[in-house]
Length: 142
Image (cartoon, rainbow, N blue to C red):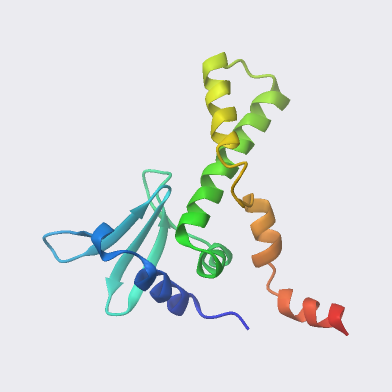
């Protein structure tokens, strides 16, 4: 059985180095990780947000579960890798004209994750996004 979102976020909060925490004058506390922000919104209440747009939005539950089982850094790396991979694939399939320097930068970003165990968001969704995952796994074991 999967843990509830609030519990997983509290475990992730406690797993981070307090030295990296950003505390504002109003007392709010936050951690910033590339593409993510973990924010304390109340006593034992936390929220994980995407920081890729001007308006931050909550991260889906299956990605919170993935971060809980791996780490926030692993989720951050997966978001960066997926974005670069998808952009490069889109450019190559649409035939968009982009400078060689920009294409090389995307390829270098993807190569930087070659030796790491990084999953694409589609793979994470298959593994963690299926609500019936545990039931289907139990059926397969029988």
